[in-house]
Amino acid sequence: MALVAYTLLPWPESDWCAAHEAPPVQWRPFHSIDDIVNDTSGLSLLARLESAAVLQVVFNVVLFVPWGLFLRRFFGRGIGLTVFGGAAVSVLIEVTQGTGVFGLAGCVYRVADVDDVLTNTAGAAIGALLAPVLLRWMPGQELRRTRGEPRPVTRTRRLLGMVVDLAAYTAVAAVVATAYRAYVLYGRGDTLPPDDAWGDHAVPSMVAFVLVVLVPAVSGSGASLGQRALWLAPRWPDGAVHRSRALARSLCGFGLYGLLDVVSALPPLGAGGTDVAASLTNVVIVVSGLAVLFGGPRGLSFRLAGARVADARTEAAEVAVAR
Image 1 (tube, one colour):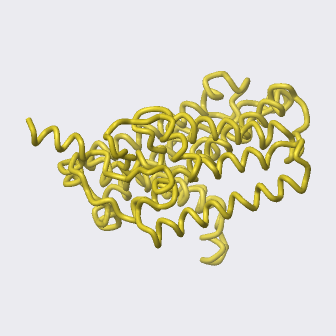
Image 2 (cartoon, rainbow, N blue to C red):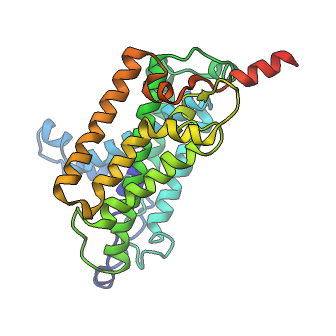
């Protein structure tokens, strides 16, 4: 999202394209040094550090440090591949800018600069070199070797799964709402709807409820997205997978939050009804979290549904031992 925002936005209007010539491609390496010298001549040290010419170079480097950090430590790639990958992504960005998003923008409105490639690549290299130090706490290759082994089900895993569910629900609703507003503004050319409009809140909440709550509950093990991310799954006394009971379990926990969020977004309820439903969503989150924190990993939803929470890899490990 940062790369898209920093390199492509704001999107040019047709009037702007007609009034401006395409900026030339900057092919000369290290021209940024000359820009810094010329733009900061006669300034104090602090003023130089705060100048746009200096900050542009610094932030171009900083922008790609995370690339080097994660590709080197989390994905386990070498320094060479990490630096080459950063350079390749930077080249793709500059080509995108130099071609007006491959002709989709209607004109070239951003400068394609070879120095951006050099500074981005430098940032990826710095991140790759710092990764073993800054991300020493992050599991590396040893996690891949033990990834399939079951681990104890703890309160921390359960609470983190709830956080993932809430984040997924919020993200899906935000994406749908943003897409709707973008369609209204750019697709239809209308003014943006008010914040309480149907398509701005109710529809995104409904889509999030279906995708994040209902679909996971009636598919596979019946675990939520957050539980699947943490390798957790509900287990029933008879060992079978019960869709209806899994759905009921979901609606006793995070599903109830999603349902109340949808209800709070429905216009016919009026201000009073929506306020009550919105307040209850916070109550559900707090009660569910406290139930896990003080009552154990089963929490409230698993207890009400008569299920236990287990590591999803347990059955696979038992089958492997039996074989």
